[in-house]
Structures are given as C-alpha cells and as structure tokens.
Image (cartoon, rainbow, N blue to C red; front, side, top):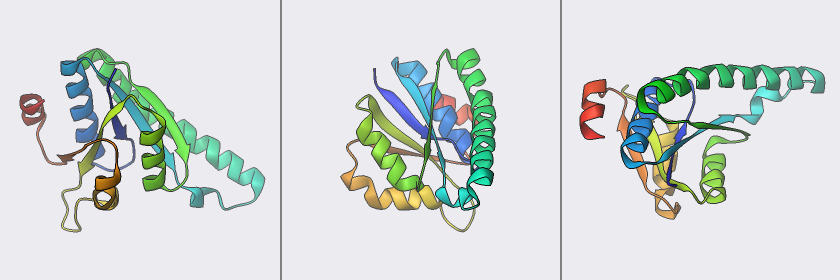
Length: 151
C-alpha cells in the first residue's frame, strides 16, 4: 500500500498537510504515516531531567496526533500510523523515507507569512532531487473546500 508521509509539528500549515494527505489516501486507497521529530537540543540537560522532558514531549506528540487521527478515522476512514524519531528534522525525514518502502509521497505544508514557506519546505526543496519520492507542498491558506476539490 502506498502511504503519504506527513510531518506533525506545531506549525499552522501542518493542518492542511494532514488534511491533504488523509483526503488523498482516502481517495486512492492509500495510508497515512505521521512523522514527528523531537529535536536533540530539547534534552541537553542532566540525564534525569532530559528523560522526563523526553517523555513529556512524547506525551504531547501523542495528544496532538490523536486530534488528527480521530478526524482521519471519522471523516476519511483512514487509520494513520504515528512514528516518533529524535534528531535533526531534515535528516530524520530523509532517513524515514529511505527506511519505509511503502512511502510514496512526502506531504509538507507551506507557511503563509512573509518569511517564506517554512524551514522544512525550504530545506527539503533543496534535497528534493535526491529523494526517492515526490514531494507535495500544500499551501497553508487553502480552504477545506478547496482541499476537497483538489484531492
């Protein structure tokens, strides 16, 4: 089964990327893999404190994921899978794409502010020629109706 890989983070544009991935998966008989990456600099504390912070980060990710997962199950009949990795975001995304042969498309949300589309879109665009899959960039300001229309 072909899976759409989408990155779960705290950005506003993440919402449209999730919607797009779930709608496309639903319409094409695919699946959705949700990847969340915990940056290593969050745990540069004493070992015991770092472990507590790591567990708290995982709990936040699970809670955030469940909001999207419920919508995917209820509205799109998709059962997403959650993958949590620790490290630098771009290398972790590339490694995961290479590790999972079922990943067929990477879906990223583009920011709408004047600073640009966001760090992931900017960095992964530079690497897109070496990725073994296509990258779909979803504008962060598309309406739900427009997303439904194009998926």
